[in-house]
Amino acid sequence: MRRENLTSMSEFLLLGLSIQPEQQGMFFALFLGVYLTTVLANLLIMLLIRLDSRFHTPMYFFLSHLAFSDISLSSTTVPKMLMNMQAQQQSISYVGCVSQMYFFVLFGCLDNFLLAVMAYDRYVAICHPLSYIIVMREELCIWLVGGSWFFCCVHALLHTLLLVQLSFCADNTIFHFFCDLTALLKLSCSDISLNKLVIFTEGGMLFILPLSSILGSYIRIGTSVLKGPSAKRFLKIFSTCGSHLFVVSLYYGTLAGVYFFSSLRNSSDKDIIASVIYTIVTPMLNPFIYSLRNRDIKEALEIFVKRVNFLK
Image 1 (tube, rainbow, N blue to C red):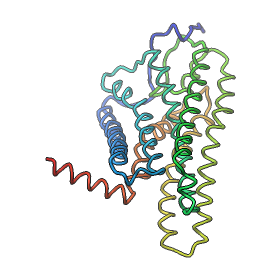
Image 2: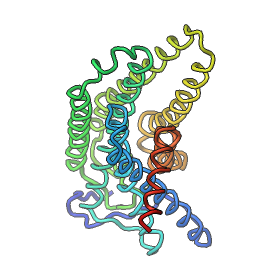
Image 3: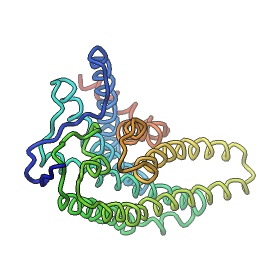
Image 4: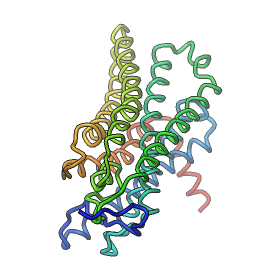
């Protein structure tokens, strides 16, 4: 098979979503609706947190960064997918493809870390409420978020630099709806053993550590609540933590299925469906699970709507 260097390719073809022509309008409207919901809901959360001084606390500080990360993660893939569906053109430039992969890895990693930080924040608030202000001081919150950004930028840069060193076969067809790392590795004619090693070691560590922190925090929360005498408090915390764990399970389960349990040499429709879940569905669910179900957020939203109507 003829080999050709990646840098000599001007574009790739994205053929991940197998949609019949008569169904494209329906799926376009569906994905557009989900994307707009994701962006508007997260923007609303960021705006409310910014405008209301009640939300100038560690929990909402983390939520605002998660909202930004979710908007960015979804915006990395969905607009280009919608453009390709509408224009009947599945191409993406080489620079656009590499850039898309970098930012997707970056914001996917950032979501991992922020979910872990938020779980720890809830653990301190529920299990050590008297020490919460001392433990979750402003300096620590900034370090946690800043450290998450730093490690995720380095993580994304590492995989990007390893990718651009590869040679690719003449076929430039990516069997995915965006430039996913595993999908690009399937096109390579080079030895990808180093890339796979980094995915399973460095990537695995950045996957397992946040997940372990999340599970550990919620286990300790559950243990603490079970010791308490209040059944009402137990039901309230169980409802909140249960919904959080549902989204975490959905996100991490599909992520693990794509990057650690699927073959890098064989494309799979299941991988594409899993990718839709963690790139499109979970960023839409996060604002509703973590923020918009919150009573204080609901009250702030009602006040905000009344002010807007008053100005009209």
